[in-house]
Image (cartoon, rainbow, N blue to C red; front, side, top):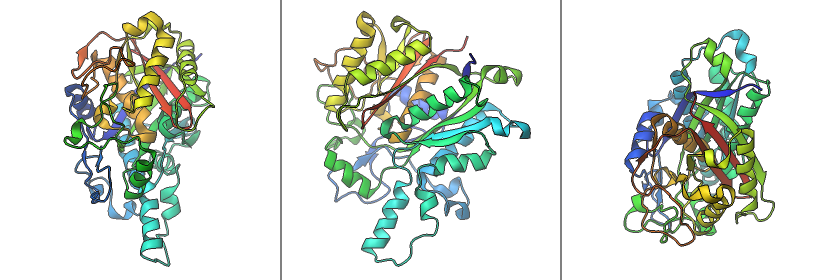
Amino acid sequence: MRRVVITGMGVIASTGKDVESFFSTLVSGRSGIARIAQFDPSALSVQIGAEVPAYTPTDYFPAKRLEMLDRFSQFALIAAQEAMQSSGLEVAEEERTRFGVVVGSGMGGAQTLDQGYLNLYAKQATRLHPFTIPKVMHNAGASQICMEYGAQGPSLATSTACSSAGHAIGQAFHLIKFGLTDLMLAGGADAPITYGMLRSWESVRVLATGNGDPSRACRPFSLDREGMVMGEGAAILLLEELEHARRRGATIYAEVSGYGLTADASHITQPSVDGPVRAIRMALSEGGANPEDVDYINAHGTGTRLNDCTETQVIKEVFRQHARRVSISSTKSMHGHVMGATGAVELVATVKALQRGVMPPTANYTGADPECDLDYVPNQAREKSLRVAISNSFAFGGLNAVLLVRRFE
């Protein structure tokens, strides 16, 4: 069976606009969560988010091209550019049909949609922007990347809420592993911080308000946690068949060796234990790993009451005695919940942890919940020799994605 490696990575998030600054911020334990700056949030009960700081679209794109790009597609292209540059890949003409793209997004063109409804209903517009549909559609990010790099192979978008990027990377992994492609740009992008979207999420009552200090609002696994924080950004990784990477002398960051995907089939918002347990076991089985081989888990860890308790139960069920020894952290405590992009953002953090031998912490940890009693790498990064890691994504709708990666040796 063909082996699949990661040879390029790119990210833009509240904690950094490139991979190195992103990971350095995580290791330092600094949060990217602050009061929302894109619009006046005063009328909202939740006024915080994990926005890309000081982001000016015209720094990256000419004004004419921005007419075709929602904010989430902009992020996807920025992350893809860094992934391609870091990979050193030059795709030959004859390889383009073996080069594909999968980009996950939970919300698609949320800003374009929000602005369109404002113009239509509040401002009584008789005509909307002619590119509204191409900007709103969930596959816009994937399609824009295909056009940018001439990728003519299997290309698609995944939309499975918080698991969108995890499923995108897993699908890309399988497309290469089973011989349909040799090269895949895969990841996720979302820009859901809009007035209308936050109004909607307020109604679900899972968002932290961050009263006092927004930077400490997201406290996964802590007894006093109050909820998740909406984030934005993108992460794209270049996945490549191992022998193809070796032939061109590529730098290999890590190997993707397992992927688990399951459905809870139980409740639209409340997670189950069974579905995630099966997803982790599936990833371990495909990756040829035993539970005790796993050194680090980048947890879904949203900071909500139910999610963190459930994920802890899941880890105990799968890892048994090893659950007390494996190191776990939630980087959402710093970059927020990047929705459909979060699985890719967190996989970049996981791969960098494998490379550097240092695990980013669960920031803002204030004290143990009796139901969350494992090692969550609280507050300070920790050095540890890492060989095998998993990244969990458990979505609303009960759709689970787990990726298993190994340090390449």
